[in-house]
Image (tube, rainbow, N blue to C red; front, side, top):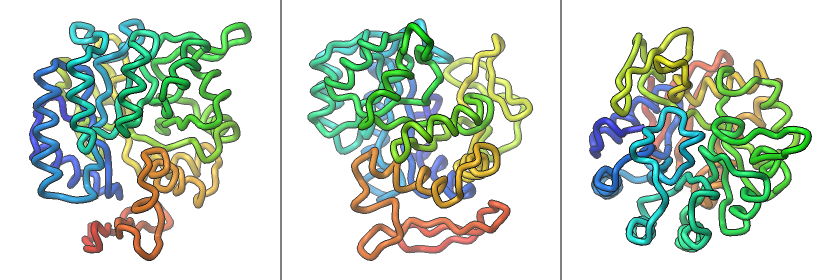
Length: 312
């Protein structure tokens, strides 16, 4: 997430930090912000993409078109409904925006359709939708779910909610944060049994990922990092300190999912979710050579980016 310093240099700093934990490609995330900051993010992404290939795969705009009832750490001052002008701008920059997370119950179905038709992955998240509203969103073009179980209506006996809608829609992918704080490992195992190849490992990483600090300032809030958790003064989770290699390790050691499948959840399945499986996600002739080398203890030894090896 790069809300606090929206520049191409920040994206590159994120990439360099990711390499240490074996992540060779990523989606720089801008959470709920002003239109001005969104335009600035597009400008930064344009500058970065012109210089570096296959590092950033496009921006993830997580907000601002969310439901304030499920805001999490997002600023309620900037949460709003989508408008024609900004949807136009996002669609015009489809080569820079890979994903948009929104709450379908708060936004016009035609805006979801326009984003989807532009080739942008539309994701349901930070939503208070009912099962029916979520399913309508899927029909409009939503194909992904941002951090399954978190900031969405749960599945109960009488109300299937967003979680139930995701489970009940085979074609929808879902990202899940395997840090043991956002989601119980048993729920990761259960979700994998239901979603199979549609379940994707994500980090939702913030500043402490791979670093050592007591707190950090994020979108104007002081977020504390203690015992592996990132929380604000009210105890609200503020992203994670998870790295991708840790997500793979946790999925194997705590969720009981085989290593080869956990690796697919971090590589092939997200590539398919983003529609880029023709160039990333597998070791195959003709694919981009973005690879990670790690040992049996999940220590990253080095990475290959665009065919160039770099030792950790």
